[in-house]
Image (tube, rainbow, N blue to C red; front, side):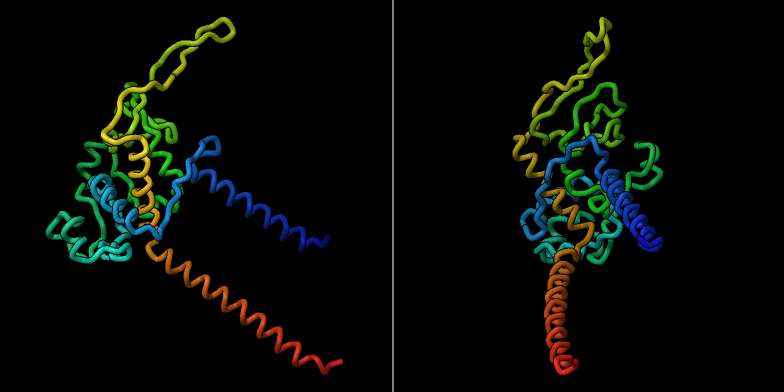
Length: 253
């Protein structure tokens, strides 16, 4: 094998390694099992329910500063429906970005820092990570917020959907024998139930994650459609060029 070939192969392997490590980091670590969100960006009903869930629960503290209100027309809503049902501030313009009313000073005093923007979180973390994360909260009296998360241990964000979650668990510290010594161990036990069943809550979170995935790239469906057309065109162009080549070179010996 030539030196240039080896160098290319090495660079290719390193690139694959970096991509793989990036995927693990985005997923929150290799030891975290992620449930499938089963998102469907063609399901406009799910996207509309998810938009309402996001605006009602997330936009109070988080912003989506790269997403315009007008982009909601891409999920089957009219401008009048958006203004009547989702834009609660009468001063907000249809062309404005989806920003939060929480200012940095209050956020610092109440939460310790400004909550992150969520426009691209689904592209960074992945839809399955968000779906699993929002269903992995449990009551933890030792945590400053009173909540903890199996996917994101010691997370600073409280569980804003706790009134809805179908089943809620609580961390209980006990002891276990190990090699003749007692060691502390934390177990999760059933604490209470929210207003939704487990299945209803899972569907609610799925709709929310579906919308957040759409929000990260509103033109994703159109981009995919254009990509399919381009690939078909290139395939046809390839066969056309192949026929022309054979016709041109058939008399060349």
